[in-house]
Length: 627
Image 1 (cartoon, rainbow, N blue to C red):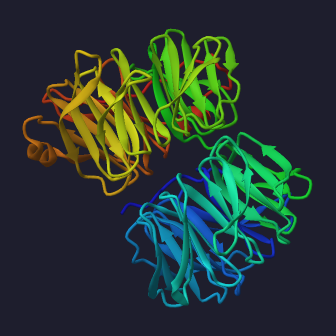
Image 2 (cartoon, helix red, strand yellow):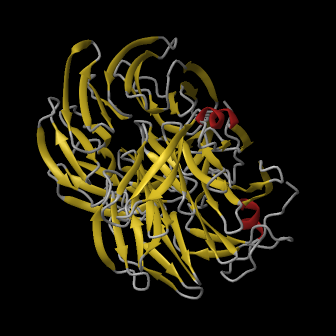
Image 3 (cartoon, rainbow, N blue to C red):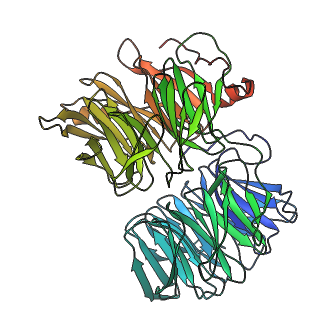
């Protein structure tokens, strides 16, 4: 397993923050990040948080938890399938004490039992496991979910609550293994938190509500929070109020009766994690550090000062390649030409741009905050809030189609950005849309790949886990990338009634982690499939439609990045642009023998360093080399 190796730009993180966790006294805050590190901040003066220690994993870090008995002990949970136990002194001196290394999948969350000696780890294999922190010994399996287990919280009485993508909330007593209760919801549950008294469990629902439950999982109150999914929740120290982080990019503060107190909005926020200590509220960010607020007044105390520019989406815009980033910038460059120049930088907002579409002089951007932006070369227009993040865009039959986190297709007027129609399309986030002649492909977290128009779509195939991306080669072949570590490819056939079906579908193996992006080179009869994974690898397969064993045998690692790969796009000249979260952008084509080869490479950080802050500066080029 390769280790993340991202340069540190300044004192904070170099990628978005996945988790925030206060030490109980509020004097220290641990922030976890996609950059593979945990930073421990001195928050004694919350207006000037100071980094004290930087702890490293080999993959992104999902969570941390301070020991309830020994204030110097911190547990950190990572996608490298380990939980590390650290001792962090008040002066920042840190050392690794123990590694819990027998996990079979990414660790999503960790929590200590009240004795400070044992801790619970929950992972993407659905398991909640109990460990001894002192010696790293596995003690027991406490709970099991049918899908990813996303969060764990332990009450003051030692009850363990776990939630998962299977919609199950489970409460167990690890000292009485048979004494457990469960409650099932129709949608994914990704966040939970016990009140400090242990009398109430708050559960963050994918439909945007929070349920307040008893220890027996009886509903006390349901609080409507947002039209987007509720992701994280934390209680005030006296249990008089709680804060919810939702995928509308906001923090929602309620009293215990469900009355709204504050609504905090900042497009830099990534509120997949929130925490409270005394009067301080902390939240995650797409930028380089935490957001800190006064819990009582809702006033911002401090915010991160530097954006991160991880690429999320690509689009061809005439002769330019557009790159959408976490910082709200869209960068324009010219792939394949000779020479080099500064980037054309287009500022479309302070929050992440998740998706792009382009036609003529105009491009559209879908944002995490739930807006569509239209740029016609001179004027930037913003839609009203559409209610949830927009991970995918495409153009179809005079509409701009937006795929939402809630599983909808929104049909928008491409000029006014008014919503013409909302269509329930998938039972999960629409992660990817790709145009076809007379239709489009869609891929979603409900594990399916479908084809057709906005209505009457046909299922092409299904993966074993959520589908991150789908790509097409004309309208004759398609491929998809999934969290199940596989890629699927198939021939597309349009039937006389206008519906689509897939033939000769093959499953491609190679990556050992989630596959995030996919594209096709060559022709539909003899395509080469490219796929990028969270394991940092760019993989390639030569498809033999008549011999799937030959296809599998052709699979190989084409290149390695310093972080997971995020997106790729086939360009008009038949090459493929490939981007990673390390900011690297490669151009891949076929050599004379029909083999894929990297033709050129650049780093977005270099472009941003040299680019003037003007939207009309010259577009850069990817320096080429012979294939």
